[in-house]
Length: 172
Image (cartoon, rainbow, N blue to C red; front, top):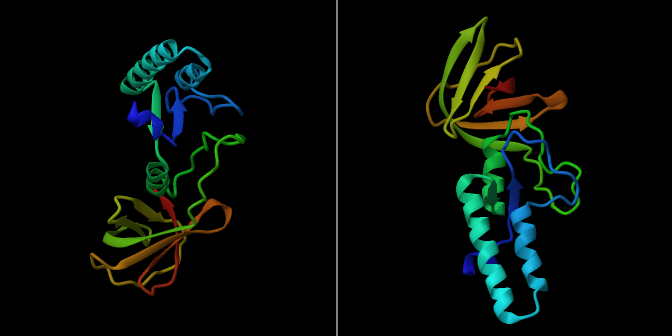
């Protein structure tokens, strides 16, 4: 019960491939839980909460409902930086959106030529970025070099290693 009292989280209902939730739509298990507040008799209200909590926990265990706190949402957004994905909360007014990440800073793990004079960059955060422009780039190809990837125009991204010129890249 103490866990539920502290929930100020984002709840995703259904699978990750489901269509985005419509405005005001909430997970059925969460609706059942909040309805228990309307029960007037203490014993009945407690019984309602116990049943609703058990159903919510079961739904979470099976993956029917996923609960993320804001820190987990931020970390997930950071890990997905550079991928083109649909926001599951688009159009909803009951969920305050996380600010869009404009850039990430990490370090270089490795860089290797990928053909046609272009590079594939592997970063310490586990992401891989492929050069998509044709400009030559000079940089120190050494593990641990600081890297910054920022949003650019038309859905592209610019990667800079140390003080090298920016290279247009796409997330792999």
